[in-house]
Length: 113
Image 1 (cartoon, helix red, strand yellow):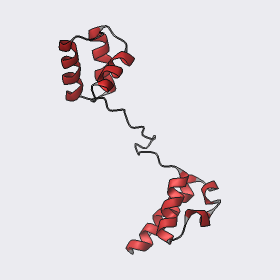
Image 2 (cartoon, helix red, strand yellow; image 1 turned 60 degrees about the horizontal axis):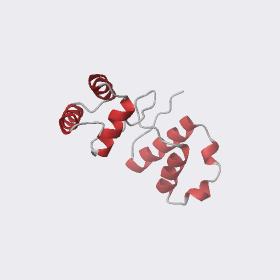
Image 3 (cartoon, one colour; image 1 turned 90 degrees about the vertical axis):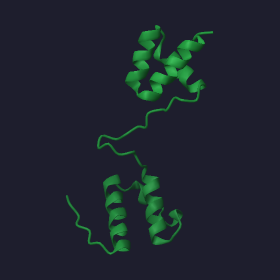
Image 4 (cartoon, rainbow, N blue to C red; image 1 turned 30 degrees about the vertical axis):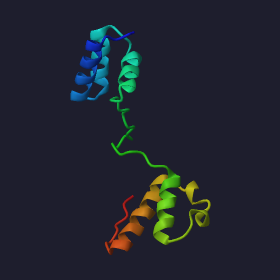
C-alpha cells in the first residue's frame, strides 16, 4: 500500500481545495512521491481532473474539421459536400464561420486583416 488512509484523505482534501498542477506537485513533495504517483492515486479515488489544453489565445482548440462541420450545419448541408474546405487556412474558416453566424443573427460582420 503506497498511501495510508490518512494520507489518502489529505491528498483528496488538498486537491479538492485547489485542483491544479501546482497542488499535485506540492503533494508529491510533501509525501515524497512522484507526481505520477499522486495523479494515479487521485485518479483511482475519482477526484483527479486532467487540465484542459488551451491555445495561445486561451481558447479551447477546435479542429478545422469541426469548423467545417459547423459551417455545413449553418448551410444545412452535409460536411462531405464541402470536401476540401478543411484545406483552407484555419483563420479563413473561422472568418467564414463567423460571417455565417452573423448572417443567421442579422449582424453585420467586419473582416479584419
